[in-house]
Image (cartoon, rainbow, N blue to C red; front, side):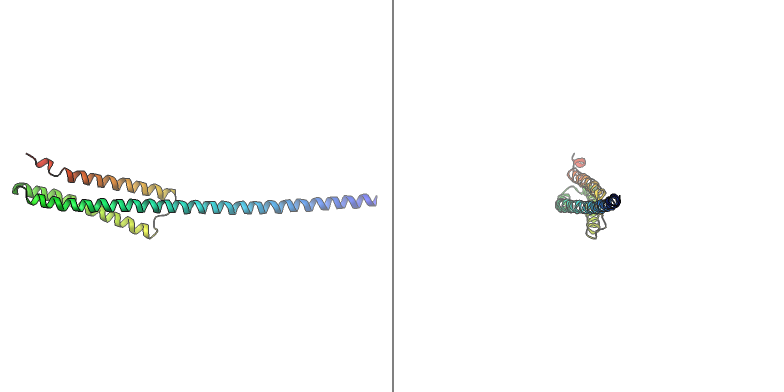
Length: 159
């Protein structure tokens, strides 16, 4: 009987220790899983940040080229207007002044966005990527509109 009691006590004690070991193992696994999730989230955010930065630099470069070309176009149109009939010059210069102002506003808008971007005021997450795409679409639309207006500046004055 004493042997049975000792064996029963040993069995109960060893079962309790096994449960504790299993519980500790489960805690460690949960902790590791939590760390893995944090690392994966951090890696995804870093990747998103890199993509947003890469897209911004590409967009910024393309936009600066378009703005520079628009400046050249405006300069060439000023020369052309100076050679046009005197009665058309005032109207054409007024139209061109408006377009030149629009180009200046676009330069300022791009510079302001660059400043925010460089100061990291734009957070790097999916929402930031969508905001950048929205900004780029709007900016490109405005640039296209300005370009079309420059091309059409003499159309109304052709007789």
